[in-house]
Length: 181
Image (cartoon, rainbow, N blue to C red; front, side, top):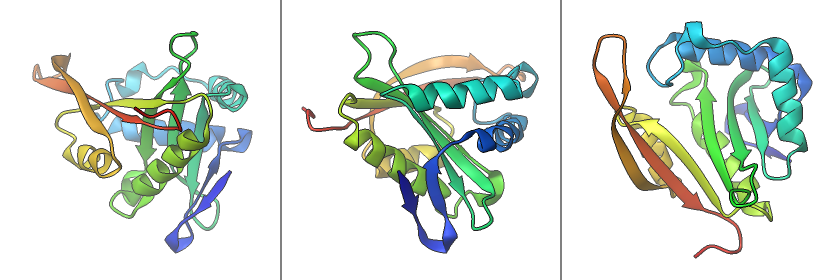
């Protein structure tokens, strides 16, 4: 599947040619040290690992890795829906989104979320998409809420930062597919 958005933004399924740009994007975002629990020095993913992940998600019936590209094919964001592997979790998927800092506030995140939700809605196995986010990431939380995600719970002081401060983890969900409650 492929989605086209204003300003030449295109979202589509990741291919092996996206492995290196995706790895670079993840490194760049982790270097900000603000939005993910993984520290930059803890990222051990190799190019081979990234290629294997792209193949694994492409082959899984309840998972997908979508990338957002600008007009010249530049990768400016990605969203992963990682479907559950066990019989009792196959109906769920965990969402993770990455947006190049230079493109935040320009509709890339919304485009990726729109494509991910449409993909999940069309997937016959999925019934629920979940995600977690630092409570301090107000911009992301506003986006998730605007896309129909509801707060499911909060894990107070779940993460401790290098300066000794803590971050709450906020859990969100959205039901998808034909069998919504």
